[in-house]
Length: 469
Image (tube, rainbow, N blue to C red; front, side, top):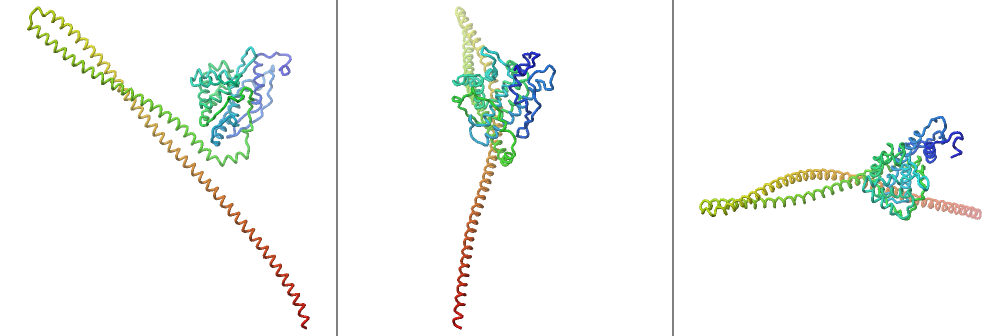
């Protein structure tokens, strides 16, 4: 760096950071990456000075960072689109050897590294995107399993290797988009790791997180125990996305089938989500039915309790009336003991009445809860019916797509059969032509032989004629 800095002015720490960032991302600064349909266009910019001049240049660091963010976003778009299309055409589970998948992880790694702050440790300066990824488990509890699995992998020794393993496990779980959205929404936490104008802190990061939703249609399976993720060199291969005339002609023929396969995979993914929603609603309905059955049993018990209390109340009334009658007719010395019995009966009656009121209040509460449960069940049944109708329509669309696919396959097979028949007919015609050519040669040879014989006979006849004279 001493050879690049002016001898008169000492660079400040801020300019050191800018110079280091520009050195690391010079491949993104020298070119402007843009998209032409589904292809990549590179436009070379003016030479960028890596040395801070005393006078302001025409390209400030904010412009460079904005250019890098735009380039990385366009690369992410092309990488994700190419990965989805190639995976759907391949029609099988992807592994770590698949080239478009490797390039996708390289692009994601560059996006996560963009604008990282340098952490000073006792071993020196360190820049790693593993720190922000560790925060995801605090925002989304489902990510704790991935983080624990990464930490338990024995072959990973560096934070970069752990970050790469985390990205692969999140893609396998089909939650990469969800995790990235949760992380980008917490910019107050990301500010500890990223500069203010980094990709993860700007709008381009949210756009990339939205694009990652499309990766839920592909299946990937990685075996990371024997893979060396610590020492891999992440270099973006631009040749995979540069436009080629021959490849564009070949892709036009499969455009319709690719669109149908995309629609088919989208419908299958939507069908899977709807099935999961229906299963959850069915589980809720079952739980509500069990709760309703329990409430019905409790209501029956409460009704039986009320009937029992009413019978006891009638019995107490009869006993009290009998005691009053006996007090009127009996001697005066027995009235004291009977009065005590009457007071006890009244006390018992009061307790039973209070108990009855409590039971009636509880019954009213249970009836209200039951009505709420019935209303909720009706709403859930209505929602289930709507989901089932949507599911039926989606299945019908899926059947139509399958029928269209079979029709296209049948047409392709018919065209292949026609080509085969024409080739067989052509071979037969060539064989007959060869036979006719051989016959013509034989006839020509026979003609030559006959001419020779005629000449021989004429010469013999000419010799015989003078002898007779």
